[in-house]
Image 1 (cartoon, rainbow, N blue to C red):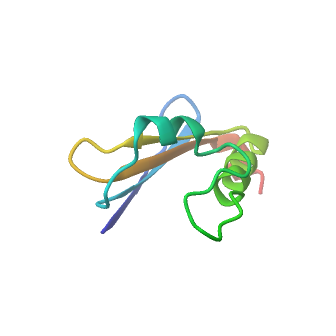
Image 2 (spheres, rainbow, N blue to C red):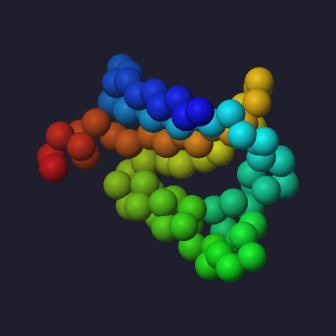
Length: 87
């Protein structure tokens, strides 16, 4: 199951979180998941999360991942509201 949340907060940032109920993510993988060419799949390129990270950063935001407290993982990112309004 996926849970997607977003809101506009007072500091001009819009946070978005995407949580799942999968097996979670180890602290070691969480530290490396945005590194180029890191893959956990037999035929993966290791570019998917790096591309996501780059897009968010280029728009003035930040992207990170955490192991979810109950079960699964939560990917979160923020984007400046002003950048979204100018599009």
